[in-house]
Image (cartoon, rainbow, N blue to C red; front, side, top):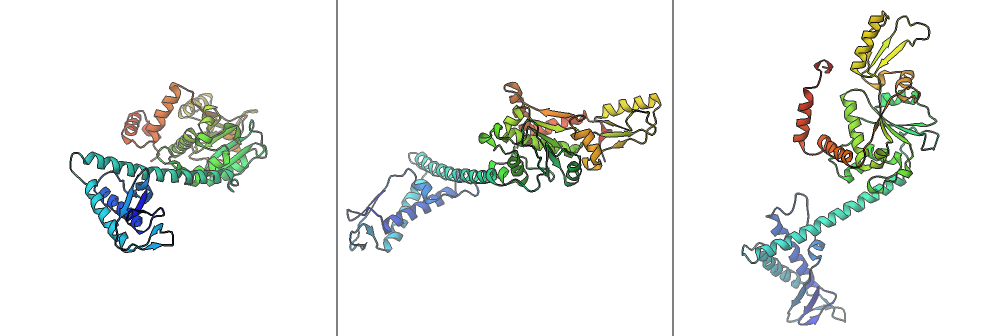
Length: 385
């Protein structure tokens, strides 16, 4: 931008430049109100309009007042209002023109300004997210983490545990040498729908990323991961399944190398427990089953052999087990079952991307079809109502 008063250059601007900029902002603000270019909450600032602009501002005055001896800055106060009025009127007419020659030009200019506004907002959001992310990665570990003593990533395991009651039992059941525990309260944020900023603001997601210690997204470094295994431990019910899906979504989207390396698992707690009334020597008093089909087979087997047992117990949550039961069935590597969550390149990755988007994305229709199709395969007897 270059400015002049009575053909004298004013390299440092002055009241005529102030008026020009004020008129610009008002003209674009009014013209954009009637269009769909600006979304709710968007705002166009002076810098968005000036970006890429070339302008010459020149005025003629009978007795101009300058600031300082060098006359580089115009100081006449009324000029601001006069220039702003002219610019606002003339530029506003151009921007809202319906003439065939001017209309596409005006729209192109307005789109350019809106694009600059969105770029500015995105850059600021990225900077804020990066700042929050750096603070997250450099800060101390959350107090609720019950860490293990070993630092050998080949051995260590991080259990992400649903609920405070299960956390209390798990603390007694774990091997504190190599098993760490991180409790989460209820259901974490669905990161498939949320922005990176919202994900980092979420306390549960942030603490998981912080505890794993290898960053997130493009900056994730598998070599820096503090644990060899990440294990989801939630109740064996529909809410527990939802929590496991939310956790899987978080790790697949922001810590995918962990999934690709086969280092993410779900614990498999038992669904039923049989207590034998008169076990033979060397026979366990308690027998556990992990699925409905296994329960029916075990029930038929014990009945056929004439083995006495009490009313089988159906576990509704991890908190119902005592520490010894949780250790034996779910946490002790010698007895437990883990399900590995993994994905390979190619078709497997494509299928995973499609599945996460269907189950957790913004588009409701495909998810409804999936649920309706699955409803016919559900055994009505399993509904807890």
